[in-house]
Amino acid sequence: MIASAGRRAHIVGWFKESLVHVGLPGEVISMEFRTTSASLAVADRAVTMPAYNADEYPAAMRAWFDTERPDLFLSLNDYEHEVLSRGLADQLREYGCRVAALEEGGQETVSDKFSMAKALRAHGIASPVTHLGTESHDLARQGPADRMFVVKHRFGSGSTGLRIVEAAHLEAAVADSARTALNRRGLPAYGDLSHVIVQDRLLGAEFGADGVFSVDGRAQLLGVLARRKVQMRSGATDVATSVDAERFRDLVGRIGSLIRPSALIDLDIIESADGELHVIDINPRFGGGYPFVHLAGADAPAVLIQAAAGLEPDLSLLAYEEGVTSARGETFAVVSRASTPSPLSA
Image 1: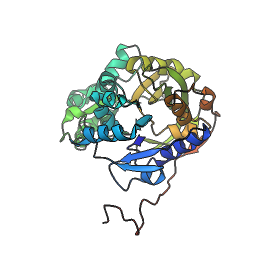
Image 2: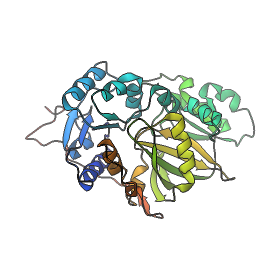
Image 3: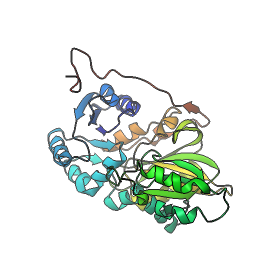
Image 4: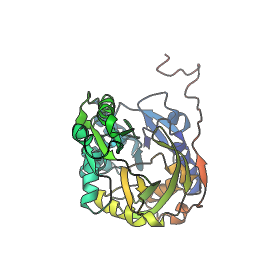
């Protein structure tokens, strides 16, 4: 079961291919709130569910799991992970399902970018010094006028609220970012500056790394996948080149020990001029960078399917070719036809 894939229908499609590849019977089900999500058109079966922040969501999830008893559950939505971590994931595990979600403490660490930066630095992992937007007035007056800052949402997803500005424009950028900021549950923060963070801009090569972990609660690191970001668009990786993951293995393992992940985590990393790797974001799910290593030959869905089925994962499936450059594109899917109209057009 893959929830909240939305436009990332390629992930659903790759799980279908991997299920066939490993020779196991089964189906890949897509669960969505919006009936027009592209992922519903790709899945073996489509299920609609109340929104993750609706009061009826937990009960509806428990009822569905009680009837269907899925083997593996993944969500691609950061705010849904927030709801799952507060006890719901453990309740769903009681139905015999491997639920890829962090415990509440680990989720709080990664969802709050202000707390995450402090936690990483406290554990000896390099990360930019991070301030709340409420400090922007003082920060703008410290150091040279051309000092560059990165502004983004404290509880953001997918680089929301991102601004890169000089000190002279910092306060305006923070105020502008705060207008669209969301709180921990994905609800409007109504311009609260404490829901925005400010960091000194780091210059250097940017990388993405995935840690593939066991799904049995042991947080065993199974493999690492990595790519160098070549071109960005609206905060997302548009072009990337697969690279040797070995230099990131220790870093991924240390973060795994800190947050105890399940299935896959996605890291955003900047290499500073002195070669130090700075972690700037952690997503406890399939992120936007995974496709660049999948197209280079890695098959994380197959490994996770094997693990969920209680088999010894074939880790050779995580091998990929280095030096493969891929570009993000667009695709389209039919989600309904006139003979079977969607609820939105009925």
